[in-house]
Image (tube, rainbow, N blue to C red; front, side, top):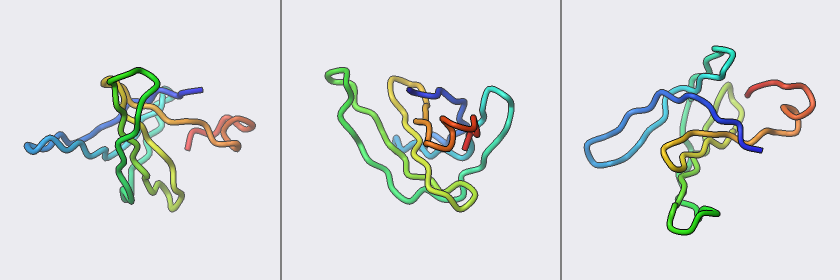
Length: 86
């Protein structure tokens, strides 16, 4: 289940997109401490690739996805049981 989120990101002149912070529907803000990996992945929709960002947020690795001009995350097991955003 995708959890769509608001993201503040920098769009560089060379086309790179660098997310800075994630904002949940509740208004809670999570700053991205570091991006450790960026990968282009095949999407379920043919011809619509997505980008997966491996991010460190409060010392924990989380994946943030950008696909079809939308940002989302996938829930962790902890999130599914406790409704904790990140």
